[in-house]
Length: 260
Image 1 (tube, rainbow, N blue to C red):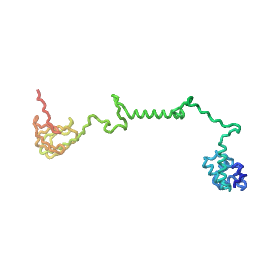
Image 2: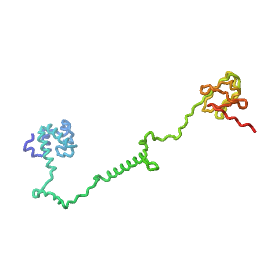
Image 3: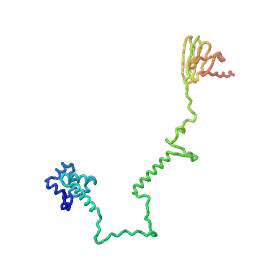
Image 4: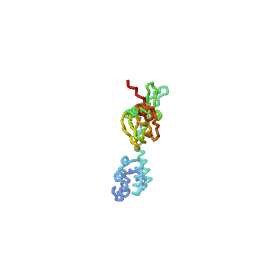
């Protein structure tokens, strides 16, 4: 227990004497209290700055006092008094504290105030962030040739996305099919590419697919059944040089001018 006589001794010396009376080493105390040996040495030497925080200091001190049988509340009170006296500023007995003079209201001079109280490194970091933000805004928002603001990148609405002025036409695949009823001469070309030419025998069937147009010449339009995209085609058209010429999709082929 801490008495009036013992409280005159430093707290660290009091705890050390309590440990030595019980013939305990610091290592043994550390094992039984689960307090690191270096912290027990710091407590007995009153090196309070070696402990991690104020809560560690008071917590380790109370646990160590309970282990040694020293009144923990009295030891904690002595610790707090010693800490307060250590932090108090010493004042000479023959010298009284002189209060600071307050400047007169009429002659008050305000100290220069700076809007930024940080370091130059922090100021440079703020300037860099501002420059990066300005660069991002410049690329997010553009201007037209007339100076009007236009949205850019992901800020641009979907309706204003770039698109072709003239949409590309969808090319439809054409299909023609011929079925011969009787022998006849047939000539089929697609874009000046010859697909078939010769006598089409009776009962024969042929089909072609492509983008077209298809040019056809028949010696006898009644001898051949023609289907365009599975639709029957009437091949009766004005004859040219004893044959029938037409185009699929259906279009009359202009007659060649007579030879001079």
